Each structure stands twice: as C-alpha cells, then as structure tokens.
Image 1: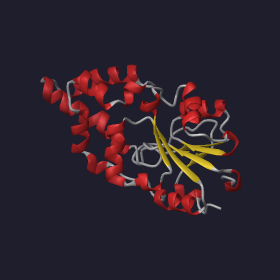
Image 2: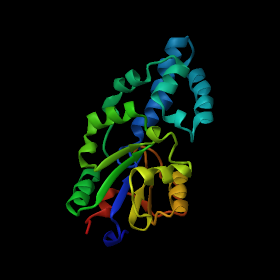
Image 3: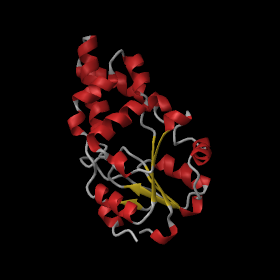
Length: 218
C-alpha cells in the first residue's frame, strides 16, 4: 500500500486512528448526556437531543475538542467524566507492532492531534503510545484545528518536513483533504475509526482496514 522507501516522516492522528474511537463516541453520545441529564433534572433523551445540537455547531473548530470549553459550557467537569469511563480507552489492533516496526526502520513518527492537552495526557497515561513518538503536536498549541488549511503551514514551521516524503494517516476526510492541498504526498484514511461502528466511506483516499496491512515496514 505504501512505498516505505519514499517515506521519511509519518504524521499520525490519535483518536480513530491509533486509538479506537469507541471511547470518544461513547463518551460524547452516552456518558456526557447521562451526567448532564442528572445534573439538570432532564430525561436522558432530552439531554441527548439538546447536546447533539450544541455539539454539531462546534464541530470542525477547536472548541469541539476542548475539555475546558465544554466544562464551562455544560457546567460539568469533563476531564473527571473522562476518567469515569477511561477503561474504554484502547489501542487499535496491530498499532503497537506498526509503531515498533516504523521506529526500527528509522522513520520519524509525529503524533498530530486535535485533542485537548488534558485528553492527550489521559490517553498517554492509559496507552503509553507517546513512547513511540519523536514529537507530539496538539492543534490547541497552534490555535487551529487540522481541518483548517493554515494549520499545515504552522505545523511545518514547528516541525519541518518535506511534503513529498511525508505520510499522514488520519480518520478525518476534511483533514486528509487539507493535507493533500498542502502537498502531502502519502495519505491514508481509516475505514473503521470506531471498531464497534460501521465502515466509513473513505471517498477518494486509500484506506486502512487494519494496521496489520501496513506491515512489514521496509
């Protein structure tokens, strides 16, 4: 699927790519509405409908990913609520084998995520995927989500890379399209970000069903 001889740097998304998106889907679709309903004396179904509209308005912005923003907006301790269901955080199958192979092959690995710093810290503590990374870049530190074209120029200023020899693996089609427009040559989508959910239509991008398909790395 990939000509590894032409790849020097690999940018890796976290949620839905290296980690199963089931945690995030369960958290925002089930756990937050449950706690919001409890705190506001609402039926869970009403809380889900209300929050769904608010979440939809924030999607594609850094606010959607911000623990602090939603803590203020919903008057809930979002970081603490994530701890309550942190047992659902999991690495996707064959991800660690892939990361180990990439390091053994001398490829530079950079985690590039929209996740808020508090979420990143929690997931690193639970999975330890950070030990495989040469660098970690959080979009919140740059002030732009990956879906926005200027993000990639800011990323290159912070973490210099040659777009022609760079691979991005991400579950977000808008992110992949922005990266393609910036000139990143190697792009892979993820067909099933939530391992308990349906396959995703990956449109114009080649897609990974399992990281096992990317082995061996040469």
